[in-house]
Image (cartoon, rainbow, N blue to C red; front, side, top):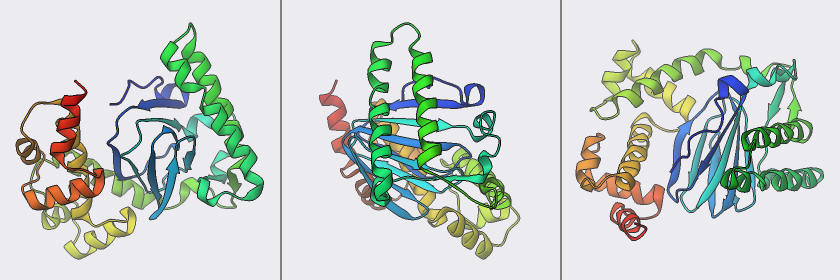
Length: 279
């Protein structure tokens, strides 16, 4: 389940979402915002540029702009995700594009541990504010998020000679168009030949280009994306499982079951059973 965002990123520079779904999974993607993922309970794995980082309750992961990442928190019952707009934050830090952000618990330097735990304690106050919603709770949540960003800048940002926003910009722009196309047409049969032709590229070049920039093959990405839509419909509709799978373009039932179990750690029928048990 995804609660309505508290803030619009383009308006305030900060967007906050609360997830309360044990099947939270986002296939490989990227965006220009700086992202922080905080797990309240449960556990998961965040893969950044092909490297997996385990995360458990009370920990956060920080992901920089335009970094390829996959989020798999199938056993987390509640997480908080905050996006910070680089463009908006430049109103406060003019040379922000010269800084590279990243932090995971498993790669922490010894001298960063105290700051990491401090940020965790700050993030811990956000869920009670959202649940109780006192007068001005959005203002308070925004203030906490901005204070968190200040700590991230001072302890988990590294200055670089070359602005990070200029790297791979052309490839990222083209990949954005490709991913948008896939999302819009994921219910249809999409072959490597058809999509490479759509973007006026050879089959071989498109295949290499996609794998290089996304970290996974084209066919696997399409199936991962389809599974996220299928999972959502299993949880939120009463339609038959195979009917849902076929609606979202999955016609290979054996592959569907195998990938679903690989990603969510259970079968589609077990997910449907849990939903019924929870009312």
